[in-house]
Each structure stands twice: as C-alpha cells, then as structure tokens.
Length: 346
Image (cartoon, rainbow, N blue to C red):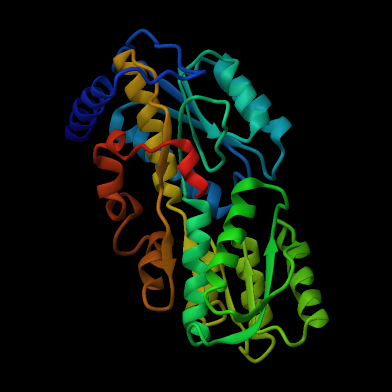
C-alpha cells in the first residue's frame, strides 16, 4: 500500500497548510477507519465511453486507497434520476459521494451533509472540489489546430459548429473557445452554433442536413463524442474534403481519427476526473478535514493521427494502461494544483 501512504501524507499536510477550506457538503467528518469506507460514485451517460472512463478512474482510486467504490448512473442526461441515485447511495451507507454537479445535482449533494467532490460540471454554489477540463481553453486549442490544418492565419473557408446539449455550460464554453481559436484566421467564416443530439442515430442526420444547407462548408467541429464521430462519417461520405474535429477519447472517436475521417479530437482527462475526486473524498474522510474547495484542470489532450495509437491501446488492453499513463497527475500533490473555480472557464 505504498500509494495509499504517500497519498495520505502529502494530501493531509497540504490541506493543513492551506488553512480553512470549507465546503457546503463537507462537514469536517470524524476521521474514519482505514478499512471501513464506501464512496458512492454516480454519473449521467453511464454506459458511454466517457462515463466508463471516469468510472475506471474512480474504481482504480478505490483499489489503490483500499476503499469500496460503488458506481451507478443514468443512461442519458436525466438529472432527476441521477439525484435519486445519489440519495440512494447515501442512504445505503456511502460515507462520501462523487458526482457531476449541474446546479440541480449540487442541491442534492449539498443537502446530504457528507464529503463530496465533483467532476465535469461545476457548481458556483457548492463549495467543494471540482476536477474538470478548462473548457474554454480546450476549445481554443481545438480551434487553433483546425486553423493550422487549414493552412494557418491566411486560411479561408466556412465553419459549422454544433453543440450536443445546447445550454450546458461546459459544452457552450468549449464552442466559444473554438470560435476564439478559429478567429486567428479571419478568412474563416463561422456560422451560428446549432444544436445536435447526444443519441448517435439522431446526431448524424443533423450534421448531414447542415452540410446540405451549407455545401460550401470546409470545417465541421462538434462539442462532444457523438459529434466527433458524426463529422468523421460525414467527411468520409464527402471525399474527405472537410477538416473535422471534436471532443473525447473513446473507441469510436479514435477510430475516426485513425481512419483519417476526423482530423483531431480533444481528450479531457476523464480518468483523472474519476481518480482525483475519489481520492479527495477519501482524504477528507480519513483526516476529518473538509474536501478542499476549488478546481483542478483534468487536462486537454490533443489527439491526432500522430498519437492516436497510444489512446487506442487503453481500450484494447495493450501497452500502457490509463493508470500508468496518468500516474503523474493522480499520484502527485493534487492540493497544490487547486485553483479558484472561476478560472475554469476563462
């Protein structure tokens, strides 16, 4: 249990050094017994590669730290059902909880009086830790890569941008960042953002219709994994004349990159999101200190044909495992990485 010892020593010392880090849901719990802890992990879109990636990080953290992690989730983006799952985990004896925190879920988490940590969606009212991507900056990275592929600042063309859950802050911020990145080539005309769908069978026709309505489009960029796959398929059906990009590291998005249909996809450190949130909750339970408040950047991973094989190996069980790949991020002093929550979407 070397990892467990190293984690506890660095985390507890860093929390003490920080001083008071109060959390709405973290009530300075009594230190818990080392081998008598259960952490409840829950997520929307549970069965998707994104959901499974976060879950794997959470489960591996439980193994490394010697605690039980129970996991559950909703098949889609059903926040009412997700709230019910969280309440059930708490009632069943989970000492701490890990979940995404759209405001509706933040209210549930904050009302349970247990240590919590969040990922993916941040809440401005829940004073705890959120581990997620720098959403707007990740979009800038994606937009700049598209500009590079299009020929640099002198590039011209027309860009179509879609968001799979319109109004969801982290996705809207990604697309805003993409716009800022694309703006570095003033000759690229950017259409108004349109809504797509999470469900693949409904997502693909929307992108097909958008290209029919804009036959002069040269760029297609989406905000989530379903979009990334769809723009790749549309490109393949149109003689690979488009520059396409999107988000997430999944078997489906990586296949599109490997085949040359999608030029670039952006990973968001899903494994890190699951691992560090569980680690923070366990540290809180064992030390009796609140979960630190703020935001940790889970990373922006630029995946192209040049490095796609590394990520494909995660899913094929070949080569480096996610635990090994992200070792530096999940084993280090995570408290030292915490930044103000307001910086997450800058």
